[in-house]
Image 1 (spheres, rainbow, N blue to C red):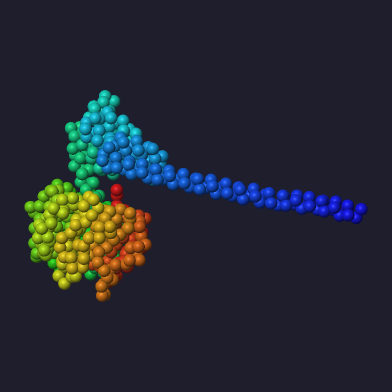
Image 2: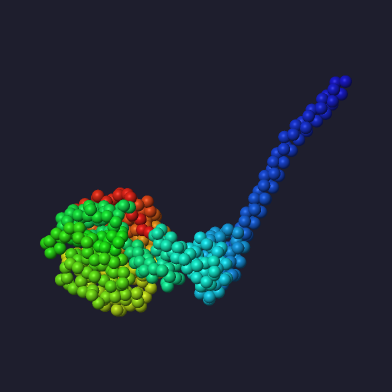
Length: 485
């Protein structure tokens, strides 16, 4: 009996032990299998994603190649297959726009119109639609309608768009007058300087068209309290010049030991510049006028025409013409010879900046040109590397240039700023910390060792030399007028 009880007990115990083992081990196996399954699925998903990404990358490269080869229809087909990969959606719009332009240039206006209607808010598609309607002379689109659209653009200060529309109806009403006015206003905006730096001072235009200043007012060059409606500003030494919205210039300061206070000079201007004791203006008809000290012949600009941009150093005036020539007058060191020796490098230049050449100054005078491709060319003194842009990666994508006395500053399309040269004894004019910190800059100015940056929020950031407090009262100023697109 005792043996039987023991056998029964053993059987019962073994059964219970098996049941417990199954309850514990079986769930563990299931969990392990589940984890393995999830891992396998994850690997499959990752591999699939990699394959898809590689496929998209290859398709994107093909699409870009089609676009670069102007095979626009093939490019659109390839970009459409990418379903939003990278910037393919934007590239579709860009490619359609290029195709529409091609149709327009080939006088296939109906095809062009179909595409521009899809792109109505993309770039200047509305302008092309108006041009096409004028070309097709559709009965429901009258010249009056185009005229009213042009007036609307004009009143909203979209002068380039208004200009393009008025050009399609030159024989209607006062369109020709508007064409001239739009051209002048657009050029005035393009050439405007909302911040400026000279030898002794720094200045800026507020959103209200008034002026903020910094530095000593030893020559009354900062007597600008009553200035209004200013859209562009410049100064160098003893004179400050401002351009009003109506194209009239105002000057203040000291010339030939005589104080000049709030004097209005000239009209129909689209650009201004200041040198040491002289000022220069570019008129809307492409001629140049100048006044002030002429000891080095810096005012001898009477014969200049077809000019699109001007600037001045301490003792020289320089201009860029429509056919990409540089015109110099005054004491400009070796810049004329430099330009003649490298004239072909300036064929794509769209704007210029100049500085230096003051007696006893560090820089002996240099002029820098900005090309439409975002690179820079230069002539003149290169003692401190102010004309050295050999680092092509650093000096690419430039959208604005400002020259200091012995250095050059460039604003890049990504909102960052680059400079030439290196700090030297007693002249710490470069602040790498500030340059590395900001990527939201929209305007720049350079003077005698001080540099001004304007952020997209309308705030001024200054660094560099600060003799006579020439940046103290302007650093950190807010509410500064921003450049217009």
